[in-house]
Image: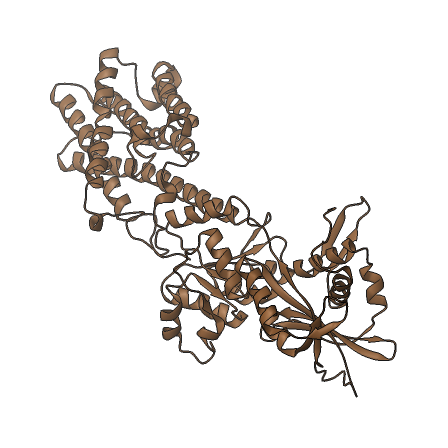
Length: 543
């Protein structure tokens, strides 16, 4: 990108870059359009970028150093090595975690271009300086094989430390806020990494996953996950926020431990070593730039590699789940009201309040228009301030049952009272049913606004959240008025026009369901926290 390479003698940098290019499985080349295209591990790609910046040719370096043996990077070994032939000599290029590579070193690159005896204190100081600033640090070294060489069982000779290299993936500006929103939504964010503890802690603090008082748990402290009993493992990890220098097996057991404690676990990853944890989690989330193995194992792929996209997905998921509940609430409560109305009318010896075609009209036309519009409801305020619901909790929970029974009973009793009063005052069944159908249409028109939120007052949700719902209510009422004045529909539905006084009287009666549900929501808000019910009333831990 045009940024000059500086900060060390050029000869040292070239030596380090050559070793890193030899011990490298990535590619970085210009495509047909002149842009850089890369494939492989991001660390290897960064090393190739350094090589190009120094004016070196990675492909030429590799051609001049044909490999004869190699050890790929493994989390247990924590370094990779490539033995190659240079003339009559066998040399080795090594890169990996400083704490595993440096112990093999006897010398290190010196300021005069040669080498000097290894200075462990100086190396440690440089390492700590980088890790404390959030850099992922790798050591690069090389050596010469003395004596006989066995490609089948290669061993590292005494090495020369070429340098410590710090890598950092800049944190996106929106990620700390996304993590804050996770906490607000009752979702704990935990870092599990193979990086050095100091690096992990520095990044965790910057991301606000942890604060300065929290400690990092290392893989060494967790011990062997194959021998540690799971209950004890659960106790050690369930309150932790940062894990460092963990192996893939330890990461897998951490996920299992969280699940054993009752948490619903989502895991993000991009490498082959992340695959077991991705598979074990409730939701495995792979980065779009990750390996094929990670993407194939995951149940969800984030194409933009942005943690904030996961949080946005949680929010959209809550909106969608809420909207399903709202539609179910509307349909079940109005259906219950009609059933209760018929049961009470029959128990009182009254004629059937409605005929079959009128029931179909109410459920398929009036409610049919409104429930479709209700499904497009925008997210209500505070949806990311609720704790997550428990996975085993169904849609028809205690809160839903309370609101269905209450609203349905109000609609049924008011409608029954009107039916009884009309018949008692000499109205014939045809005229009385005509008013009853209109009353139920108006009840459904009002009640759909109750269904916009199970928690908030209908008056606190902006109309702008769902203009389609307003259009749906107007359309449902308009179609019914059209039916009152259209001979064909009037004859089929057995309805007739009503006076303005009758329409206004029924409008007032139908508004009662809003008044009752507003009172219910206000009373429910004042319940002690231990008596809250429904979605958000019982917290389910999530990780």
